[in-house]
Image (tube, rainbow, N blue to C red; front, top):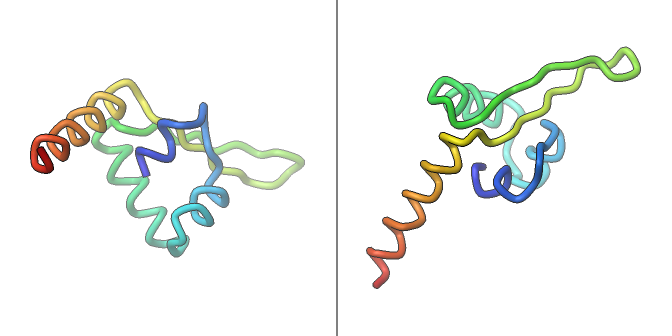
Length: 77
């Protein structure tokens, strides 16, 4: 999820669900955990009177992702 969010300024809930091929409930739970950790920011807005949820990676999320990628590189190296 963080890798997807790291590639775009922000992503809406539907796009994330389709990209990651997960259920809405699963995505919602994962986003909540990442938000609690400070890795993503969630913005809930109304557009044309319809609710829309946007997610974006935070600086802390980018740092965590970079650390995870470095750990994976070390394991593979």
